[in-house]
Amino acid sequence: MDLGGGSTQIVFEPVSSDVILANNHRTEISFGGHHYALYQHSYLGYGLMEARRRLGEAAVAEADARRLRAAADASQPAASLAPTLPCLPAGATLADPSTSRPAGSAGRASEEHAGGAAGAVVRGTGAGFAACAQFVTRHLFDKSDAACTVAPCAWDGVHQPRLASAFPPGRDIYAFSYIYDRAVELGGAAEGDRDSGDGALVLTPDALRALGERVCSVDSVPAVPAAAAANDVAGGPAHLARAVSADPALCLDVGFIYHLLSTGYEIPGSRVLRTAKKIRGVETGWCLGAAIHMLDSMMAGSAGAKG
Image 1 (cartoon, rainbow, N blue to C red):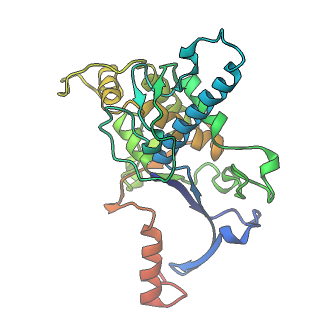
Image 2: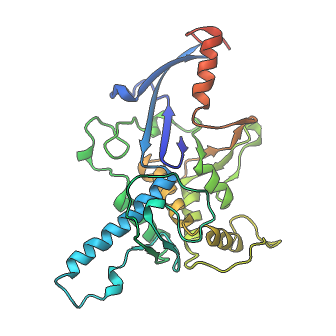
Image 3: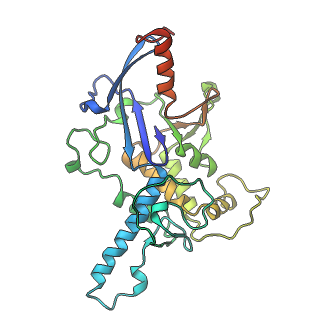
C-alpha cells in the first residue's frame, strides 16, 4: 500500500477463495513465469494532504452548523462558533483548509486542490489523540453497510477482499511513501529482521497509536530552537516538540494514518507491517511494479520472464 498526497493506493493478490467481484478492481499480469490476478484500487481523497484539507473543511462545516443552531439562541458564546480542530495543538491555525497547511508549517508543500473554504481560519484545541481520532472517523472512512453494494467493502462503499485472509501471519504487508516518512521522522518505526535482506523497518497500528498519543500530547505550538540538541532522540519529547513546532499538523497526520490502517483497511493492532524507502537498494514508488512488468513484457513477451 502507498500513501501519497492526494490518494492512497493498494494492490495485492487475494487468496484463491476470495473472488474479486468488481471487475474494475481486477488486473491480471504475467511476471517471472507466473500469472497473477490482483486486486487494485486508488482511494482518491485519502492522501495525506487531501486528508488535511478535508478535515479542515469538516471543522469549518461543523462551525457553520453551530452558527445555524445558535441563530435562535443568543446565549451561546461567540467563541464556541469559531472553527476548531482537535488534531492541531493550541495556538496553531489552519489559515485556509483548501491549502492543507497549518500556519508556520515547514513541512512538504501540499498538492493543489480546487475549491475549499478559502479565508476560513481553523484553530487548534490541542485536545489530544483520542479526540483527534474521533474527529477523523466522524468525517472519513464510511464503514456503513448501506454504502457497500458489492461486498466485502473496505470503506466508502469500495469493494475490496479482506486483507486478513489475503495476508495470514508470515505473509508481509509493505507500506510506502508518507507512511514511511511519518513513522521514521517521528520515531515510530523499529529496525526489521536483518536476515530478510530488504532493509525495511517495521511498525504496527498499535505503535502508530502510541506514537500519535505522544505527538498529540504536544498541546501547544512550542517555541524551540532550530538546532537539535545532543540528547534529542527520535520519538523523544524534545524531538517531537521540535517536529510539531515545524509542522503543527503532525498529530492530524498520525491520527489519519492510524485510522487508514486500523479502521479503513481493518489491520489488527499487533499486525506487523514493513516500510521502506528502498528495498534491496531499489527506490520504492507506486509506479515501480508497473515499470518492472512493462520491461519484463518487452524483453520476454506477454508470458513474462522465466526467472
